[in-house]
Length: 550
Image (cartoon, rainbow, N blue to C red; front, side, top):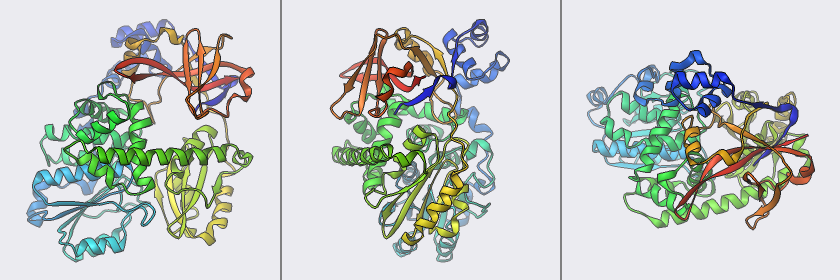
């Protein structure tokens, strides 16, 4: 959804002679050099720029430190335990949880272990380890429990399992609140280095397996499709290591070896040969997230682990995603049309679906540039989600009210919680009080002035060398002054999307129905290029990111 940008908050970047000098020094095109300068790189950083343009995964992994408790390997484990025996993988219902579950299953099956998996139901059980489920696992001939994307804060439950003779491994990346050292807990948030702390759970597991040679390098590199999906899904900072993970993972996706994923990509009218990270973030990942939000994530685990096409899994996933989109759209429309949304930060409705409020909160936080807390009923209590703009701390906000909460956790920019109905009003007031001091300052936008008519497939490929884009590596934005030739037309049948046609090209404005009241005040268009693949043809399209107004 595009947002409004006032003239005082737009800095227009224009290439200079220094861009030409930088292009010569690092052997890239003048456009890429200009974009690097726009991102604050300088000519003196030639070595870093080369590494940034073409990150090498093996080099980036050399100095990776996952923390003290990760310093054990496959052989030492076998020496102490004899065998992994029957293995149960316990995961989570978002894409990182799904991908780490599949990766763990494939690793332990390759080792030769009998493997089962369990992912809790979002609405019936909720996030994390649950005593009744753990008790059931303990009584079902389980020798080793492998917990992924959760478990760091469940030490008492894990202790009970180990007392009963079950070995436990935990691969997680959630903030523990305090340093927790226990054998078998691999969580770089404890004492890993900065690159390790920027990993999702799937890449923590993959990196541990790589560093300790659990499987051959070639085998592990073919599993990087899972790491790429999870990294982008969890909005992990795209520094050199995570960019290398995503780049290599997208190469694996293009080879179409994971047939279930390839089937989903085709059903979404995408092509693995021309897939961009934006395709993954906007289409593939929301589809894989949808079943876990609306019902059970098991469909996605079975799809990604499948060796056949399994159209039935894909059809179920797409149906859940349609439900998610429809419900999310209704909630978003209600919130954006409510004048209180610009005054308050914390909202609840007993008509909302708890499975979709996190994505709605993310969009609202992005559009409004302010902290957002949404709550909805779920399994006898209120399930809530917190999203904060860059620089905020969602976990700190929840820590301040933790005495009111049943459960809470997450990341500094996105967190979740559960609270009893009778404590909601007090929680709402305390969170509103915390966020009332937040200064809702419009961010500065830097964009290069460039006519979209000059951006062809070759130019797009050049720009893409600086990707993948996301958190920590924002995509470059471009600006075109409004010239009066533009026309505004609906795009599709829903009335939510629009096309701005101009002599230089068309801009696609998704979910923008409420932005055109100020059409006469529009001064220009801030956009980015993307690929469009349709019926075997590929072309560059232009997505409207912001609308410049007086």
